[in-house]
Image (cartoon, rainbow, N blue to C red):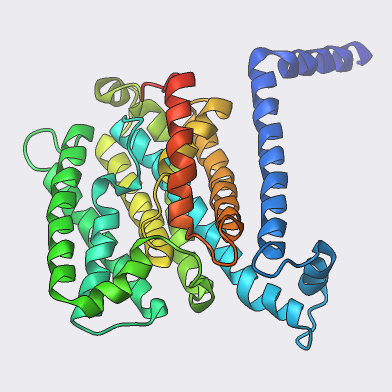
Length: 354
């Protein structure tokens, strides 16, 4: 009996020390490191700003909130909602980017490829121009509806003809719709100066209006998109091998693409509706995550879901201090940081063939 137990322990030790076992533990350790990094980024976001707040006061505001304390009010009513929206938007954009690169097998794809950003922008412009919507809390719902409508339209166009939707057809349909919607948005903005004055604060991508957004209203869309992404993860691993190979392995390509499109629409639509079309997060973060965890979509989704919020929250923090006493919008900061970072990735890391 003792010999059997010893043999079982030796077999388990050998399994953990095998290349597969070591890779799994490295991935788990990486998730732990990223979780600690996200906690540090949240504390920085709550402490850093036009009025610096000591970390001890930040912790007191979180654990023993005093409504009579001005610093506690700043943390609780202003910076905490902004940080939470930043986490939600960063998660949504990065996971949507990972899904987009997987479903199109294009390492340069980002969440805007299917026209989701343009659809949200057009819906926001029409809401401002026709319905005279000025409240950010109301504008997000028009943007979300526009993102979903355009995503469905792109998928329908990409499905026309023999063979149904394919990565190339989806990309081409998205590019065509993007060009059309950009022209429509530009036309409306040229016709209405009042619309331009309101729209320009939304289009740049910002978390400054997060206090006016009910995060609990966005969470169902975010949770639904993330759940669909997790469901599609295993099938996307076989899609990366090519359509013929995926079919031979029993993958239902049409269903996988529909589920993935729904996830991208919910995630990217929610992010764009809440903070505007923020660029580079959905493009760069999946490559950073892939460099550590490899091409397994299940791990890639998990890594992107934590790394994306870290990148966006730290970009927002940097924007608060780079040009005092004012601040730079997070959409500008992600472009300033993400552009050179993506060039470095392309030069130093061989992009995976998806």
